[in-house]
Image (cartoon, rainbow over all chains, first blue to last red; front, side):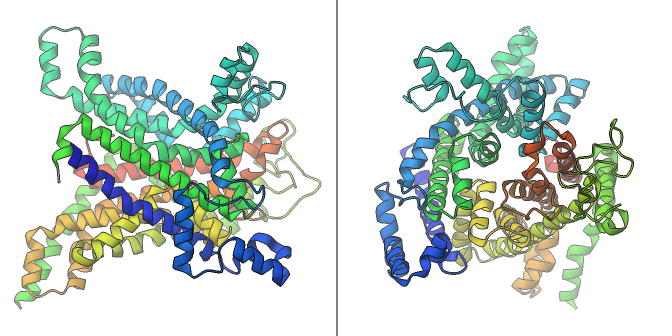
Length: 336
Length: 302
């Protein structure tokens, strides 16, 4: 077990170093003079130009620059935003809970609908239910989610006035930030109005972000379920005279869910990519919107740091899923 | 003489039954056939856009701003799908948008397919020198969620049509490398490769005229599905303002400012998305059909 863990962790190290190289190279791949690109007119003064080069550490030889960058990065210092002059790491973790809250709710939505829908489709294979679920899943999978979000805003906010258009909570609520999760903070403040407002703000973005994972989970649950239902032990369970419900829940579902859980773990990347679009659309103050804003402002330290942090996160979660899978399924541990 | 016989024996007999077999399976899948026809229609619309579009896609008719579609009460028969906020004909913009979207899809698939196949074959053939570096580089590219990698590339290169294609091409690259490498490694074990090698075929010949044709099936499927991802990602970049730039009629870019009109002009919000959804759906259906028909191993899935 320990050997398996070490080997998997060892495999991640080169990837991580590669990401840091990529992020480091980013600023050097910008066509033209980076200082001019970042500072615009102000950079024309040669003294200011040299000062900026020095401040960004761009006047050192390349390998030295990289070592500097890494040395700071290891200590959690990814530089300062050029726009707000705040620490990139601090800004990231200030916005991160908003993204996590949104992603978790999206994933919850996707699982609550996707797993039962996939089971129903598998049990009624070839029926109208199956065709409807699979058709809907294919549509969801093909959905441009930013447009889907626009349509939902138009219908539920514009026409029906059921949900607010943007943000995390109504402006008349000013809850103290304890956890950074708006739902939890609103609960802690014991203000039902605030909680309701937070939920209303969260519903549409969560549905939009959860749409593609929902489609993936429904398809995966269906095929895993079909696979399991063919197994001999299911036939034996039926032959023993167990009720169909018991066979499905206690015998089939338990095994069918292993691949589904893996797929859920691997949706982190999809969720974070989707969060960029969803957060921009709903003005959700998370890391996705922060990154896009930084790109349009040419705030390169934020772009670099944000990409590095998000990639590290994806690597870490994938590693975790991998390790967990190895714990659950010993066959994985002993291959290769 | 012996050399000629070996090489021709290896490839030829397989090719014809494959096509017949493929068509037998594929034509049974009605959804995929319909999707294929729909896609051909979209393709013809894109090709013949200048003749089909009723108006110039960037012409602004200032006395016809935000006209609803023709079937609505205040609609006009002149503008079938209505006009946008500056009085441009939405139908014409969608027709020209098909050009841009299909071009982005096609070019970016090629941009990831060609280098991807070459790198994948190199990783499989020269496992000693190339496999490690190439696959680790692909790990790095895959560590970033697709759209974020595209956003990062655009952040460096700047927005625009060409850079969108490059960005999406880079995003797709690891998929093709992995697929080609895996397929080629599988083929390398087979007898016909050994036979060609014994007959004196060089590495290049083995790679491209012996092994590659036998890896084609998964690559075709991946290419089709990559085409739909490319269209979606390009539209997403356009929507974020990082892709094709606004005056151009790109489907995603048409939606970038649509948020302002959710209360006043639903057709500005709706139409471009419908175009994206229909095209992507058709490509995905076709891709599923191709996969089922080309790859018997996957037939049970999905």
